[in-house]
Image (cartoon, rainbow, N blue to C red; front, side, top):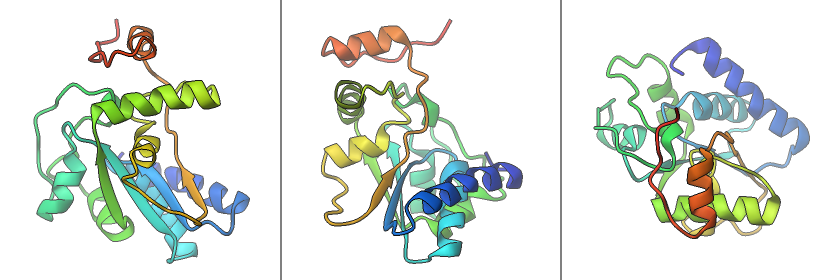
Length: 183
């Protein structure tokens, strides 16, 4: 994730969004190590600096969030979360993503496990989309009214569908199961 080629590749998502929706006001992006949001933010704000870039992380082990608060990369112990794809450090010797996230991300929100679970269920029940917890954090923030953008043209990135079937089944049964390691 902390590689200029990866960041550049992720930036093509921002270019594709603008190609489809040139009147974009805001993009909401899952936030972990910062590669995805750094690339998208760099691409969008290079073309239109007025576009708002919002990051969303899980409440459990939000390393980039705490790094931004501290003004430098920090470490946190990993915790189990439905947003397991977003867990992990950014490396204290981070070379690119931290500074790009500082520069191009306007706001960062955190969502709870219950909010992530609600978003996963909502996306499946309403839109027939299987989205992993890390990919559903933006929708979780919207459903929980943490992000309110009435009258704005908004894109919310859904970044993955890799959710364990037992976890998904538990969520559909109304439980918020702890994620289990894949075999």
